[in-house]
Length: 131
Image (tube, helix red, strand yellow):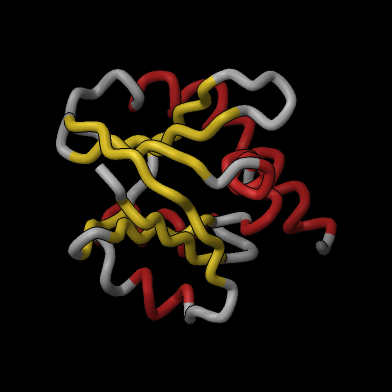
């Protein structure tokens, strides 16, 4: 990763972790992805933008395998997704062969624009919903 991308990554993730995510998580209809912390074993909730298509939920990680929730998925793919205020259990899959930029065009515009603006290593994630 270039020095510029590393500085961008640190600045954006610091802002998200400390300011944006704690506020956005409180919104009742914000979509949340709940993973299990790979070290702590505690539930970790991350606001995400994505779309449900049938029994699948699609999203794009802006930092690929550097994203903490992606690292948690790699350790334990069992997740929950809160969509429109309702929790759904599922199994997450990383889909590196998917065209993440094309996928973003099918997802909610505001979040997709933010992911494109700050992302440096886009990675598609599919959650197969079971409940």
